[in-house]
Image (cartoon, rainbow, N blue to C red):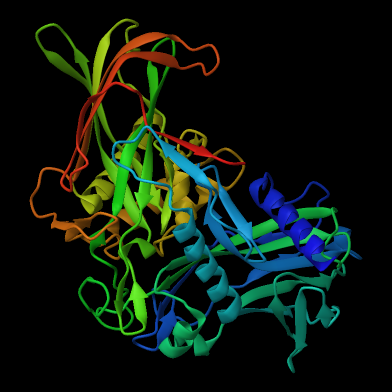
Length: 523
């Protein structure tokens, strides 16, 4: 019975995590303040932890205005967050029994087999660290008593002298009363700074992601189908590597994060979608990416450059090809962020051409050049900022989030401290203030913390090559003729397709005519 409850509870949480259409549920009940993402830097080598300003204080989530939910239960879970391989959203597992999807990579001359076992091992390390190194503290800021069973099916409730409760477990329930004002705060355990303890747990230095989920439930059994999601707060946990295992950025003191300087994202192009409109064409590129690098062990400590989130961006040029020359039509920077130890689809933004639609029957060429991961990322953000300003006349304008999936992924991954403006892109009202986004982008562009400058590009075996002043580390050339509209997808068919790739690490191919690389996953 316990396993059945676990499965049902996990499925229910996954469902509500993927369908967070509203921040406040329709009944007007409890409200959760979950805008600010939580960034925590953990350095076992320096025996220190805190945010990027050095504060050892994790912000609380406030749940209040609960009059209409009185008598029901507040469900709280600090779950392990992970990205679906098709990049359709963030899933949350609260029991640690999640595994990477079983997928296969097809028609790729570059990417090898899908590495499900290694991705799963990374997710399990993440869950173990979250559950072993964090409890959740809840206090009623209005002084109301907190009502909860102390021994729950999936949770132990420990009462503190100041009236707070500490929640230990997968999911915990508190009785809701109309005057409750719950402040919910993850609490980091100091013992998790000890390298010996982390080695005992099997934890490696890596980027980790968690979600503090709050829901209103009909009962406190853990198997109620009467669940209403009221908020989630993303935690980005960076366990810093040791310079003995990985090449790192310069050491500027214990409060300045250091990042691995080996770049390990390999890719293959997966699709070019063209949708014609009366006065323009909308293009979206998609890539299959793989972020896996060899592990290096020194003594009992192991680490890998692919244990960390990495940028994947490049310049896109669109040419019209004539009989004697080719003409540049438009250019832009595109890409996304790649989670640690992850393989999957990175969709670019839907880019609208500045001058008219593509001609049916016309021959075109798209060139994608990835020169320097850090510079391409910065240029992309600056270009996106200018594109927004060009598209909207005033800063009071609202920007729809549906055409910018890659920017939403930047906010979700949360690798920087100053994500205030861009964080609004994951609010589910389909429109956010332009000025707010621009200010958020400015904060990211000015930041000198992440990403680092990568010294080397590495494959998933053991080959590395210094980036230096090379013209690119990956480059694609795609030739095609614009065909008829596909009635099923609404996109134009691409005829006479020919794809070529160059990479500094090899895996090159020329004039591939069998189509794009694809990813097939079991449901």
